[in-house]
Length: 147
Image (cartoon, rainbow, N blue to C red; front, side, top):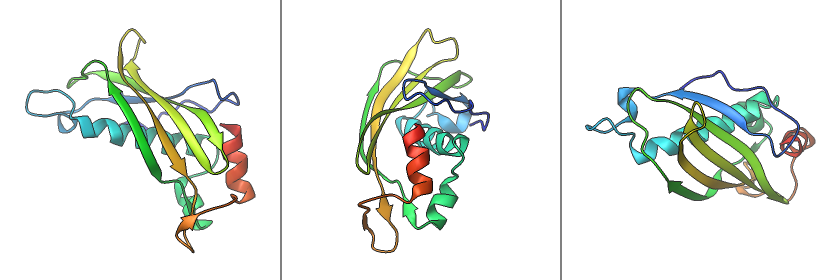
């Protein structure tokens, strides 16, 4: 995985791009990326997206909140194999209160092949009460609103 995430844009239609180099440990014995690896890349991409907007996940946790995934919808289109370079794209798809839906695409670097598409639904959790937060602290709200 790479930490060379694209700088954030202000438009929710703009994709945040997270480049990945596929290494042997990402794949099965046949050199094809194991399906669970895609979830790891989606997680890294969303954390990098928040970081690019100025809010590290650790900072959010220090504020007493988390944004766990509560629903995943993934469609596998074409396999990714060892040695490939890909782009994991993330953008805000929808928002309702503290429920946030992120759209994801995993594509070839040149954009000619779509490997994976899907959505992740996140909710804000108050770490003190372990319940869904009714509102977010201002710092987190500003970052999420800028998605």
